[in-house]
Length: 216
Image (cartoon, rainbow, N blue to C red; front, side):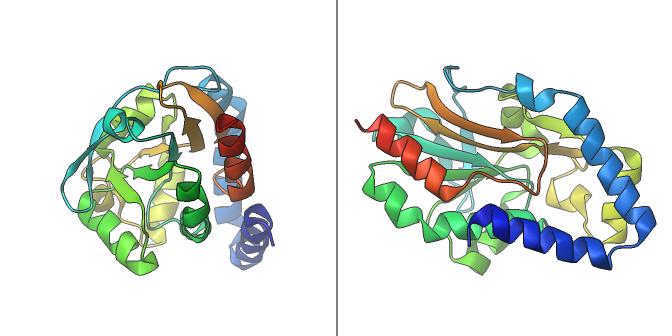
């Protein structure tokens, strides 16, 4: 089963269990972010990837320019460990991590969570790649991905027991769009997936195909 087929099955199951009022709030927020056109204006193929230095779960700084010195980088943005769709996507990337590194690339995941929250995610999935903290979503903003949750959706998340105030280090409402980039060693984005729908993610097979093209 493809990643997005798995995500769709999970989404449909969740929809059946969710009260109609909650579904409407979430669906309306999804339509609003899609209608805003933000995904179409985010950085895309051919753009220069903004450099960054972010903290890993170990507390060590990780710089994009340093990673690129060794090969291309697969950079994926996700919402947080509290998001089940993110967990499924990161698990799929972990399953293909060996294929990515075999192509000489480095996989890096970025979220607005504080390092402690990301560490629990890393331990939970035994991730072999770097998980970095973009507090305040400053890097996501440079990539054109950051947006603020509407008040009613933020309230829904609180009702689910999701403490974004804590997880995001006081930047509770700002999250990134779903996005994955393949960046070549010169710092140029050679393949991009950006989607306003957080239930849709880049397929690992498409990432690998992009890396294969890059390696020709």
